[in-house]
Every structure is written in structure tokens, then in C-alpha cells.
Length: 345
Ligand SMILES: [Zn+2]
Ligand SMILES: [Zn+2]
Image (tube, protein in one colour):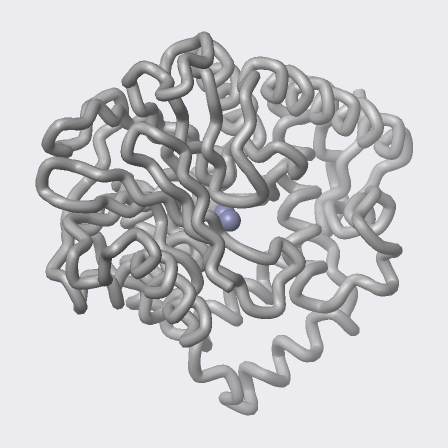
């Protein structure tokens, strides 16, 4: 059964399932405008997800062809997956931040073999053991990987410019750039009085940036062509503070459920990351590679039960934390180590 929630003031959310994923579903938001409905995110590109999205719109007396525009919080497939399909049906525009549009463009143009080479190189320099790298090399030489997720993602037609109002007839929706989870993640601030009179300044579509019960994954911004040493965790923590200061009355996230008190949730997440960094520093009293750190970090299951692909994500998260600690001057690379090991200072 399609689940539609009315949030008042011309805003609804539709639960669009994500196949084989513990997150369960994406909340696609529908915002009524004077030129027709605009979607904030669209859901995973899968036939079941598409029929749920269509059914959800149907419950509101709408069809995909009625959609006027699509605002994408970030490029991940559970948010942007169906945007292309919606545009095909309706001629809607798709808006995205330039940094995530660049990721979409790069992914579309990337050759799976080149991507595998990059991944294997990166993992090796993070200290991944040969038994982890071997399947990647085998896939590369066997030419077994012909496609990558995101290869068919839609290129946006509009750019979301931080700080500016989106061009939505009759609505005040302002883009707030919140890099961290992805380089071009945005939250969208609906600067209108809360329909139920909750105290605070309007509502916030928070994408994956601010969720009520999950701390979003913060890895590296993987760009094979850019050697800049980015600090995604630092970006994320700055973005959290920015959102905390908005003083919104209610948060409408892209997973789980709507909640009040954004500032309280921001404080919780900042404290969580502070604790985590402190815990990692304790591990780094002995020098560790990012891989060795990932093995010792706390995950939702023991390391030996984490599948291959998820280990890549875990190592990326370990590296993001090391970069933050290095930037804060609390850890540094141990000279002469290869692959590079890091230790607390
Ligand atoms: Zn995401
Ligand atoms: Zn998501």
C-alpha cells in the first residue's frame, strides 16, 4: 500500500521503496506550486519504486506527467534514480547543485575498467590486503563489470545555487549548501510559516544531511581526476552547524520520518562525531593504515561479516575521519610507512 503523508501547507511525502536495502524507503516530497507539483527527490530507479511513486502521486490526484520540476538534494541513486524517468514523462526540469552534477557527469562518462583500476589503487594505498584486491583485479581482467550504478543517471538542466531562492511560482524555497555526505548536497529551506503554527522559521527538506535516527555515511568525494585533499567530515560538521542556526520549526528528511527540533538533532550528531573522533584517536596510539583502522572501528556488525563492497565504503569512512584528525593536528602520517600509517600526536 502506498503511504502518503500530508504535512500541510501544500506539502506531502510519498514512501518510495528502495529494493534490498535496510533503509527501506525514500521519502519523496511533493510541493504544490502555482505551476504544478514539484518533487524533492524521486527515489530508486526500479520498476517497483516507479509504480509506488506513480501510485503515491495518484493518491493526490496527480500523474507523473503533471510534475513541473524536480529538485534533487544529492546525486545518490535513492534520491536521483527516477528523476530521468519523471522528466521523460512530464518534461519537468531537474535541478541539482553543480558539485553533484559534476559527479553525475563524471560517472556517466567513466569507463568501468578505469574505475576499477582507480578503486584498486586507492584501496591498496589505504592498506587493503591482497585477498580484498584480488576479486577487483579478477573482475577487471575478466571484463565482467560492464556497468556501474549511476551510469544512466540523468544530467540536470538547472543548477541549484546556494543561498538563492529556487524559481518556484508562489513558494519561497531557498537552497542551503550542505556538503559532506556528497560534495553538492543541498538542504531546501521552505521559508513559510509552519502550517500547524509550530514555533520556528519554516521547514527544511534535509535530504540525507539531517536524519532523525541515522548518522549519514561520510566518506571521501571520490574523484579520480582531482588530487585535492578534501575534508568531507569537516565539511559535514560545518554544514550541520549551518543547519542548526536556521532555527527551523520542522525537518522533512528523505528517510525515516519528519521531526521538530533540528538544533537538538544537530547537537546530538556533533557530539556523536566528537565521541567517534576521540575513540579513533585512542585506536591510533599505535600506527594504523586506514584499512587497519576500519577493521578496528565499530560498525553495525563484526568486520568479518561485512561484505566486500561495504568494506570499501567503511575504509572510505575511516579515511575521512583520519583526514579530519590530521587537519585538526591530532594525528599525522608516520614517515617512511608504505602504505601510509597514521598515529595520534
Ligand atoms: Zn545519500
Ligand atoms: Zn539516501
